[in-house]
Image (cartoon, rainbow, N blue to C red; front, side, top):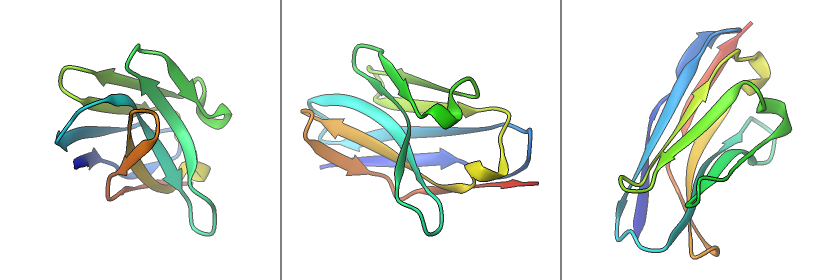
Length: 116
């Protein structure tokens, strides 16, 4: 069992920055990618950014140019630097670990609130 543990998040004014970190612990084997998803009230969970074991990254269009994801395969960690935050970035952010391309593990989530 893999357990992603998130840290970071909080409250920030629009235009500010926050960073999120996630470390995967447990029976770590076959990790294909790690990333961040978010879910705002009344909305579906959506991909924010992810990085695979080869270092390739994907970003949601809404965060391109503002957010940067980075990962460390040796430490099984993934970080998300969020700049120029907007009120619409307010959501619960979840760390995701994908193993073997088909098994997903989720963190408990961390709140990010951006005030206008």
